[in-house]
Length: 372
Image (cartoon, rainbow, N blue to C red):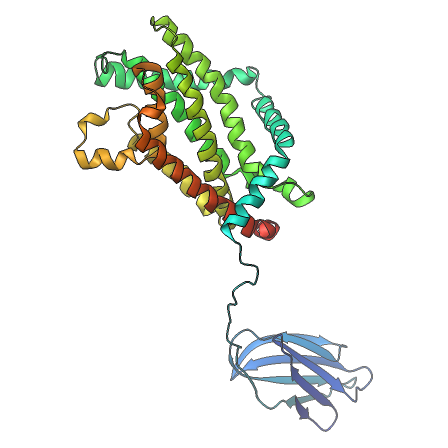
């Protein structure tokens, strides 16, 4: 604590532990106005204009040598000035302590999955409500969930099927069917990635106003995308029957790929929705990368034209696993267990992603309100 003196008044100067510089006057004269000026070396940092208040507070931000100039104006306009001695401020070193509550990945996974399991009915009802309320402000309503994909299908078939390929089939199958068996799963994948990524952020009002099982929000967003996908699959079955394809038990393999897709994209949504809450830039990054992912996945072109090393790298794409799974089930008559290597690899990948997603979500969800 320092004192600065004048013939008329005394001013006390104190620097607290939370960087506050407290200035107060003693022996206060009636009808006197006081002004305080904070200086770092010879530079004015802050000032408080004349007022009857005999105290002031300054916040110190940068390291350095500080002093305060005090000015008192008495009723007869007599101006008195006093200067403090120098106060040296040195910022305390920043110590990053490891949290005592470090999240255990296994425990976090159990916690999140238990929360989802205990609230699955609520999650299902909310997902159905979100699905039914989409496009409710338009005249065609849910018809847009069918019309929009069909417009995209027509565009891609015209450009790639007729324009680039000239209508040639793929492995003996009409290009339109081959394309649909890849394009319709992609619609589900892209919708799941985008909606899952922004799921918690879009439900910010729910996060702020009520206690809600947060882990169900990104998973519920995947369910909404899946409900739309079911409608699209019915259209695909109509096309298959129209082209003379006979229903086969192998077609039921699609149910297996539905299960994998729900698990994989739910795990991915837990990761991306948490990262989006931490930094909004991640949402923009995902929206940009989704376009690149579409053209990097052999949906409109065949992988046979690529070099061998490129085929291996592309085969590590989980979305390609789903796309090939639909084509194997509906066109080529191949069961999912006939590719056991791919099955083990992608389920291990999905399991690892699920553990990562649960750990991140469990670690940061208590701070979601702060991020908002």
